[in-house]
Length: 419
Image 1: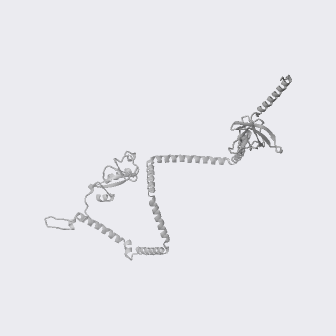
Image 2: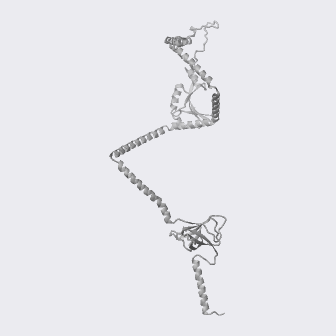
Image 3: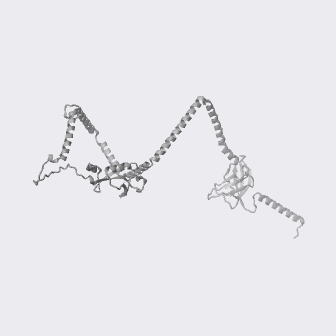
């Protein structure tokens, strides 16, 4: 079959037109050979959105704007036809938002993915929104600053007016005196803080001991919490018992006792009875005092010269035998000695601690999980008392322990024996 040159020219022109139409459509974002779905979105304004603008999802192009037309109801709204690739499905409640795709303000549509399992069908209307442009964002940021600046200017104007009125010569003088007083106060505070710092540094050991004592006290309270609960329970029972008791007999008994005591006091103030004479007769007091002194002298003489008052002989063997009345002292002072107890604590202390400095050699005794620290050397009472006073600076609870033949005895008993 032979084609004429006009036929060939016609075919060439038709092919050229087809290629031209396809090229223009392709440049506009529509590919005839690629299936697409069409959706619609309604906007109050499009802010520069144009046909063939990109439609993206997470930055990936999934379609383009097919057409932009006014709504037929003359409301002024714009209907945008979205051309989306057929293999991309839009979940329901997704939003077609107009955004700026670059810093020049080029507009595009971004699909805000909702993640639901149901999808829009081709031809459905998708919810829409518009991102604020740079101008709106700047206006939103600057407007509060503008309002605050206007308020600040008004406040400054009022403050300047007030200052102009009150800042006369007397006011300036008063302000100068106030500043001087403030400076003196600050100086006093600085000196006080320096004194406090010096006091804390000097009493650091005392504060540490106080803290440890408080910790031990709190530990003791915690360990004996059950006993405290029992005590509180007993007190509650006592208070309930007292509340249940009738108060009238108790009040009557108290009134009777008060009257009796009043009568006794009145008798003691009068000299016409024995009690009054005992309390008010100075001569009787002097005689009793002299009699006590005489009795003391008599006992002393009996103890020193027993054979002057007591003679007893079991057998006549040519010598005198005397009975010790039990009041003569026995010299046991050579068997009495003392040590100083410094502290007992649940925390073990090193024997070379600075707390024991100047206290001589120290012995550590561990009993039932507690550690006691005492002086190692035996000494006389005066020497032990001197060491205890020295230990008071670090151990305010230091005490003296008495020993007799190496065994601990009461301090009062030891002192009584020494006397």
